[in-house]
Image (cartoon, rainbow, N blue to C red; front, side, top):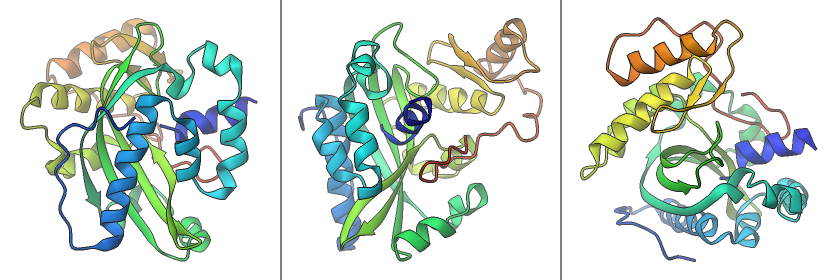
Length: 250
């Protein structure tokens, strides 16, 4: 069960809250995926778990069905159950070469015939106080999605937290009307490099660094939030971005 929960929290992130998504393309595949991205976030917003399952590959179907039929997860507001409202702000395609430094895509290419597309999303989650976690917090969240073709249809084969280096190089994600939230979300992503997980207020959600206590974490949070140059992230502590099937890499 712990393995299933970890997988759902990583992989798993009614059309009432799509917010001014601007996206134009001549690529039919990309256009199709763009529609699926909107459906995915709308499904989270409405707790429409059947749609999320339908957008996922067959290999994940049983695990997802078990997860979403588990009354304990619903009662304890685990994963997407914690989301009160989800609003897609914007999204942008990412080249495969840009995520290659962070993961080995060879397995996905083998499973899905080499037809892969990657998109980075800005999503605003409303999460009730006390239900935030290292995976989902209240406010602007970055989500990296990878799509592969299964039986001729695009499926969401990966949804995960991207490393801050990737987010920063994709400058088209900057929110014109709410730059302060974007900058704070970048700071939250930077702190993950140190194994320190916070919400947009800087409140500690989890510490996954055996060499850092709570007081040190608070000092680091203050430095990062105030633009002070922090120490280099400990080697090996940058969480790889991807989860490959049942193997949790981060």
